[in-house]
Image 1 (cartoon, rainbow, N blue to C red):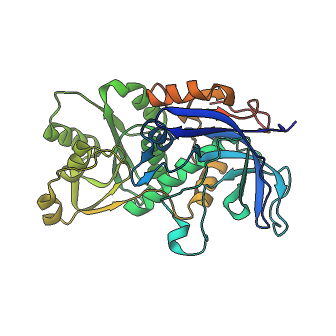
Image 2 (cartoon, one colour):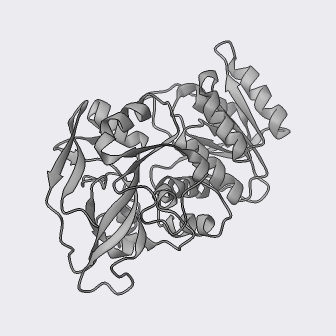
Amino acid sequence: MAPNQNLAATVYGPNDLRLEERPIPEPAFNEVVVEVDSCGICGTDIHFLKEGGFGAQRLIKPIVLGHESAGVVRKVGSSVTHLKVGDRVAIEPAAGCRTCDLCKHCTTQKHDGNCSNYYAQYADCCFKLPDNVTMEEGALLEPLAVAVYAGRRAQITLGSKVIIFGAGPIGLVCLIAAKAMGATRTVILDLEHAKHRLEVAKQLGVTDVIAIRKEDTEDQLVQKIHDILGGPADRVLECTGSQPGMRISIKATRNAGRICLVGLGNKDVQLPMVDAISREIEITTAMRYNHDYPAALEIVASGYVNVKPLVSHHFDLKNVHEAFRVASQGEGIKIMIHLVPRDTNNPIKFTK
């Protein structure tokens, strides 16, 4: 039975998270109201909770967290024809006119998130899930869409040799996307204390991993990368935002290679730009995605990729504070919040 209240995980300021009741929304003519089933915690959510913002986005009013969600359609706007009540959907957290290129990959959302019992969203930003895709996988389409977009920005193609810096949730979905796009040799790097994440990378089929030790120099890490890949990398997905990650990315990439900066970390960095320029290394960035949900859904629904190993913890909405504590301390990988009892809306149970 659908709840008759709308509890929402709302951040009021740094370290001020409240589970509060909000009105149940009504759909506009082009919207649906979704009863949210599962919502993953993203690093962006943690930044908003800890620091009151993320990058250029700052908290200007209390805001509901969460943007990695899936649920069940409960109400349908008057002009919506492709969805009906009862449909299971993944929610792309988009807003704006949804027509111009800027809106289609808007990176500065100022609207409430969807870690709440009910959420109204444009119907064409809700993607129907086939029966073989669980709600948890539907929620994971959001970070996977980020990775698909980053892979496209990096121009990963069949036979690419790819470095991925960072084995957090985004780094791991970037590994999944890179392999799906044709990368044949991959290496993922993270700090030595993150070995549990590197083990998941092995489950996902990475060629090899590098656990970075304090004593490792940049040149030593470059050599380790080259040994694994059989030479310099063609493409790099830098998911840490760290100065060392960016510097090694440049040094370990072949002439005319391509680097996509995906992670946000250090505000200012010093990079070997003469090296990058003289070797014509292209550096691009990725913040969100640009109509990449359909591709993300297709590779999951077809069984071409498996995102289930990313989910390390499950929490009910009432335990949202503990969920964010675990996520902020890096104890797991993807922390999933369940707003209804687990597997309520899954035709097949979620198992890894």
